[in-house]
Length: 307
Image (tube, rainbow, N blue to C red; front, side, top):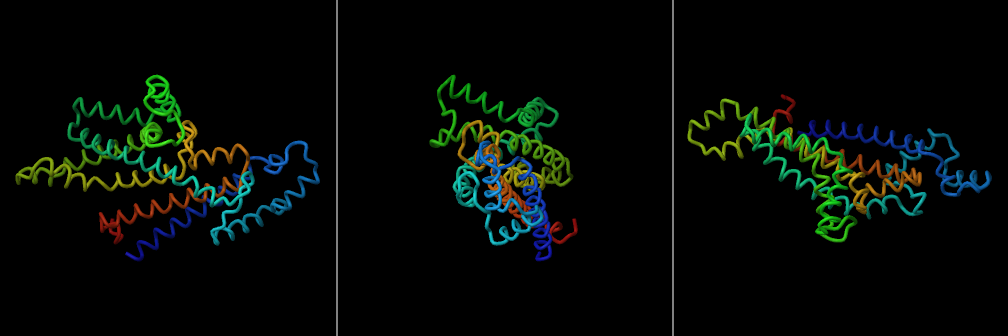
C-alpha cells in the first residue's frame, strides 16, 4: 500500500510541476502588465523603475527559479492589481466556488447515476434511447448558452429565481443546474456502459437463479462492480468544477475563482493568474489522489499492482 501511495504521489507531483511551468510562461505572454498598471502616458523611466521593483527586468529563467522557491514556502506572491496577497484573494473566493461545485456535483450524481442505471436496465428500449438523448444533449449544449436560456426563462420570463450573484440559496439553483449538465451527462453515459456490461455477466444470472431480489442485484452487486469508472469521472469533474468554472461564474456573476481568473486575465495580472492556476492544479491533483485511493480500496488488485 505504501508503494502504491508513493507512486501516485510522485505522479501528482510531476503533474503539478508541469502545470506550474506552463502557467508561469503562458502568463507572461498575456501582455505587458507594467504598461497596464501605469497607462500609455507613463515614461520609459517609470516603466523601467516599476519593472525593476517587480523583478521583471531579470531573465526569465531567474524569475522562474524565484517563483519555484516561493512556491516551496507557500508564497504565491502579491496581486499586481489588488496589491494584496494572492493567497488571501484566492481563499476569499474559494467558499463561493466550492459551494457552486459541490451543489453542481450533487445534482450531477443524483441525476446521472439513476439515469445511467435506468438506461442499462431498459437497454434497447425507448427509455434507453431517451436517456441517451438526454446524456448526449448534456454533453453538447454550450454552458454559456444554457445559462443564458435559464436566465431568460426562469428569471426574466417567470421571475422565479435571481439572474445572478450570490444572494442566497435561490441564487445558487440556476448556476448549479447549468454547471451540472456536463458531469451529469458523462456520469450517466459511463454508468449505463458499465452497468450494461455487468448485467450481462454470469454472476448476475446466477444471482437471479438463487432468488435474490432484482433491485438488490442491480443496486448492490452490479452497481458496485461498475463503479470504478464512475468514481473516476466524478473525481475528475469535481477537480475541474472546484478549480474554477469560468464560463458559468461569468454568466451568473458568481463571486468565485472563475470570476477572479477572468478579471486577472483582463487586467494582465499575471501574478494572480499564476497563483490561481497553481491552486487549481493542486486541488485537481489532490482530488485525483483521493480517487486513486478509492480505487485501491474498491479493487485490491489495483493497489497490489495485479490489475
